[in-house]
Amino acid sequence: MFCLREADTGNLLWINVPCGQLGLAVAEWEAIRVYMEEGPASLPVPPEEQFEEGTVAFFHMARVGYRDTFPWWQHWLGFLAVQAFGGWTLPCHISQWANNRPKAGIPREVKAWSRPLPLEQHARPSPELLAQSEEVSKALRSGKTLLDYFKVKFGEPAATPDEAAPESAPVR
Image (tube, rainbow, N blue to C red; front, side, top):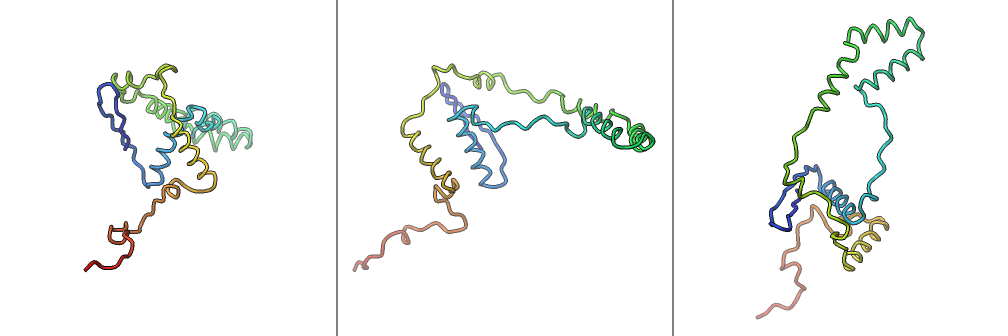
């Protein structure tokens, strides 16, 4: 769950991002942090365009592949007959229509608040933040995880104040 505070009014906007494990939540937050520090250059390269199964383009690609691979009679009996009884591309068009329907809109206030600031209003990272970021990056390059770097241990009970205090002679 992330919380964003509007600077002018102090209003809070909570974003709930379900994660199955703590590691996934930390990775999500780390991705957001890196994007905020390094900008769009830190985004991964998008995969190249491929046909998605169930689309009309995938249907036509499969049809051409089937036609070029098999003799004409197998193409007619095996592919075209099955497709004719299956409605040709009608299911593809229905799924495309269902996927392209308008989704729930974002409120105007959130859209206005989310507009990018001009470059001159961007906050500059402090020297302390740059030093801490470099320290964490160095630890990650050496093979540590974020949980190792911050010494987070799961499954071990936290030390009580009595256990954390050094042994001393009893007071009489």
